[in-house]
Image 1: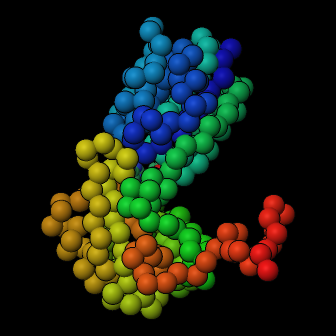
Image 2 (image 1 turned 90 degrees about the horizontal axis):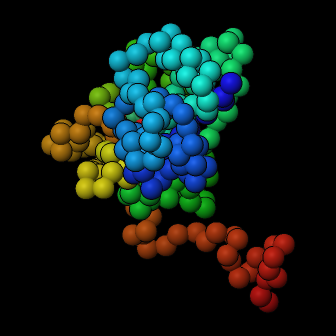
Length: 257
Ligand code: SAH
């Protein structure tokens, strides 16, 4: 009896798989991958004879049954985009494995929020500006639990990484305005972060981000980052991180006098 590994494939570039994830793929007897965003990693590193299948046309029941059946023959990889713990239906699949007595584990992946920040060369935290990152979405067919409406989360004025919401940019704009964000607050949208030759970065403001995304025809696979730290590399001045401040002592370094 094998084990099922939920492996984070990262945001698209197969080089962003973890070493552990890649090793598990290379020794898997079966791989079930989640749609077109991760097919490269699945097919590049799968051993010959491995049973590789796309799950895009399968229901949860079919996926669970497939994983249980495949685990009877050896170790199985369930390859998911980004990190498996974010918007990945992990618990629904794992509960079915528990019920069938199949062991499972999770290997983290580079989430698209981090990949998008990297693509745009932005930081998500900045001393004295924002020290908090909220990973969220707006309600689509999945409703938001009470208290997690974007308007409420945006009232902190910290960094927001908004998944699954590119077709609802008007709703993002409405929520940020209601939370008091200025019309010129910077927003960056990154499509297909980490995809060589296919990445798109759209920089705008609360006022114009929707028109800019429309002009660039961005309608899917995009991350919305709204943050008071955006563009900080071009500011005249930023507060220094204490860790590297010559006047600050810590465990590994004495302050200069
Ligand atoms: N588990 C994934 C998220 C799955 S939900 C993760 O950790 O990234 C799917 C959403 O993720 C998309 O709607 C989009 O908002 C975002 N996304 C996934 N891949 C992306 C990429 N390469 N670039 C930008 N956004 C991406």
